[in-house]
Structure formats: C-alpha cells, structure tokens
Image (cartoon, rainbow, N blue to C red; front, side, top):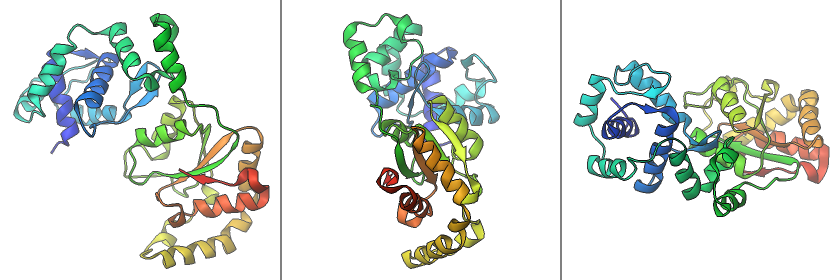
Length: 297
C-alpha cells in the first residue's frame, strides 16, 4: 500500500515521460507541491542546490524496493511496473500533466533559477548562487529571506508531529547552530529522527549535532504516563536523582553557549512540560543565569 505522496511521485514521473536527474526532479516536485497543492505533500529545506526533501528520497528507496522505480544513481526512472502503477493510482493526473507541460522547457540551471526567483528562502544555503548570474533583485530577495544570525543561547524543541524538514526549518529560522539530543536511546520509528539520519540531515543544513545520552531518561521509566501529574512525578524524580549527577554534561552545554553556539535541546514530545528537556533547560538556567534561559520552539 502506497501513501498518496508516493503515488504523486509516480504520477509526476509518468507525466514528465522520461528519466529525470536528481536535481531537476527535486525542483519540479518542489514547485508542484508548493504551487499546486494545499497542503503540500512534501516539506523541503534550503540545501546545496536549493529546495530539497529528505522524505522524498526515503520514499524513492521504498519505491525501488517495491520494484516501481529503477535502481539508478543519476535519475528518477520508472520501471514498467511503476508506470502501470502510476496510471492505475494517479494523483490529480490532469493537474500534474498541466504542470509538466508548463515546465517542459525548464531543466538544469534554468529550472534552479526559476525556483530561486519564486521561492528565495530555499536558495539561502545554495552553493551555486555565484554561477547562476541572477539579477540583483533576485539576489536581494534571497539575502532578505536568509535567517538572521541570533545571539548565543539555549532553545528546546520536540519532533512530535513534525516532519524532518519542518523540524530543520524551525531550527534554521531560529538561528540554531547546534542540536543537542538528550534522548537516552536516539532511535525513532518516525522517519528522520534516529541518530544517524538526524545527524546527517543537520550536517547537510549547517547545524552541528551532539548526543548526550547521560541526560536521558530510561524508556522503562517513561511507561504509563497518562496525565500531567504522571509527567510531573517523573520529572521531580529526574531532577532529584539524575540531574545532580550530570554536572559534566551540563557544563558541556554551558561551554558550547559560552563559545557562541545557539544550542537546541531536543527530544520527542512537542510540549516541553511533557519532556525532560525542560528540566535540563531549567538546570542550565540555574547554573548560568539569564543567558541560559531557554525558549521553546
């Protein structure tokens, strides 16, 4: 069973009608989802050549495993089975076909330039701006869209209910330079949030990743938390029994902030009062004063 967004990938490839290079397909997928869908099927981050979706590549691997896409390092290519599935399970085929006709002459740098002009935020981490000879107005729009550098400090964020891309954009827009993972076991069934994938994604958008498992809470202690009172009892024990033993880890974070980093403490829960990261943040504020007072993303 395919998700609708995965069926969209097949529909778009079928409408294009030929193998499409990685960068071209990312730009076409981005423009389609931004300009023809509400809400968009995929979220994107500003990356080396503009808008990029990690989730679309995870879906590509799934579709290759299903035999619907070819194993191809250079292109996105439908197999015969994939083309048949695309036509059998098409998503908005008339709209997709119209979009592909409209953009049929745009490939390579011309397609990248079109994306940069229309959606400048996603060009803010581009490594090829100087090669594209964009007009001054477009360059000014990109500069204006670039997140402003923020002072060193502390924030917290949970990934519950967020895609990897929306999570990374939240960090980028807040000026975060380092993500500090305070989970005991940094594994997740949600795509993008296990340690290996998350650290590589952070690196790709210029955010350093650090894992401090000693600040985590064992999973068995986190069972059967049904009410806020259950969470409060767990955090009271954590603050009394665990945190006092972790001064070295807390001092690492203080040192990062003192060195100019804007550090985000991260764990799963969206609400900070249901996550031990708020206890870590409060302990750091107690040690470091107002400079280490966290806000929650």
